[in-house]
Length: 377
Ligand SMILES: *Cc1c(COP(=O)(O)O)cnc(C)c1O
Image 1: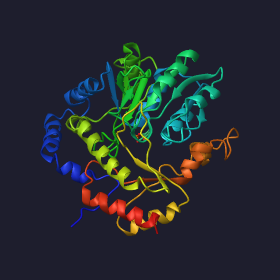
Image 2: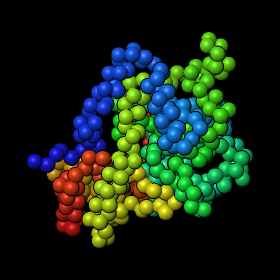
Image 3: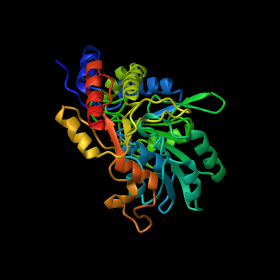
Image 4: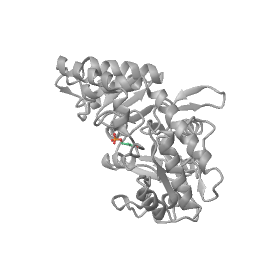
C-alpha cells in the first residue's frame, strides 16, 4: 500500500535515524544540561564548519534570528530596511516590531527572489539595510546585492530560513554557502525547514567577530558580564535537546538536499510538456535545495486543482497567497494593489506540491499523474 503523502513527512525521516536521535536526546536528559552546555556548543561548531563561517550564534527561532540581527546592528526607529514583498511575514514583522520602516520591493518572476534593480530604486538617505530572502531553497542574487550594499553603505542580512545548505556561485566560479555572504545570515530550524529540529530553533551567522560578540550579548539579555546589562536584549536560546537532534541531522543535510532535488527532477520531467504549468526555474548562480517545489499555473483554476489533488489524498499548498504589502496588519498608505505586479501575479497563480526527503517513486507517480489528469482534462 502507498505511504500516506504529506507536504513534509517528518515521521518517516525520524524512523530512518531513530536510534541515533533517541540516543542524542537521552544523552541530554542524562546530563541534565538542558540550557546551553555541550550539545549546543557541539552543534554550533559543526554548523560553523559546514557553512565555512567563523561564528554561529544559536537562538530560539528564525524570527528571533532576524530581530536580533537588526538589534545588534544598532538599527534605530525610522531607519528603512528593504526586503521582498513575496515572503513569509516574519521578515517584515521584526522590522515593524523594532519600529524600523519596512520598504517592500518586487521580485524576479523566474526565481521568485528579490529584484536587485527594484532594490536600487527603493534606496533613500534613510535606508540602512537590505534583507534578501533565499526563497524556496535557492539563493538571491547576492553578488548584485552586495555591490549595491557596498555602493550605498548598507548592511545585508540574509534571511536563509529556506535555503540552508544551498551554495551561491560567484561570477568567478567560487562558491559560498547561502547565508554567509552578507554581514549576517539568519536561519530557522522549524521542523519543516530543510534542517529542522523537533520544536523551535534558529541561528545567526557572521564572519565578523565583533558583530558576533554583540549578537551573543543581544540574545542573552544584553549581558556580556553576568548581571551587568549594557544593552536592552532578549532571551533567545536554542534548547539543548534541539541542538542534539540538529547535530545528528546536520550530518545528513547534503543527502537530504539530494533527495529533494531528485523529487524535483521527477516533477520537472513529468510537467515539462505542459503549457499550463511553469516548473521552478533553476537559477544558474545557485544550486537549489528545494525547500518548496512551486509551480506557476497558467489559465488554470488552482483552487480546483488543489481540491482535485486533495480528493486523491495529495496535499498541496499556496505559498504565499497574500503579498506582504497587501496584508491587513501591514496595509500602509504607501502601498496599494498593483504596486508589485510580479509578486501579485505569483500570489495569484502559484501552487506548491509535496516536497521532502522521503518521497518515493510510487508517491511521485501518483502526484504527477493526478496533476496532469486535472491539467489535461
Ligand atoms: C520560517 C521562516 C522564518 C521564521 O522562522 P521561525 O523559526 O518560524 O521563526 C522567517 N523567514 C522565512 C523566509 C521563513 O521561511
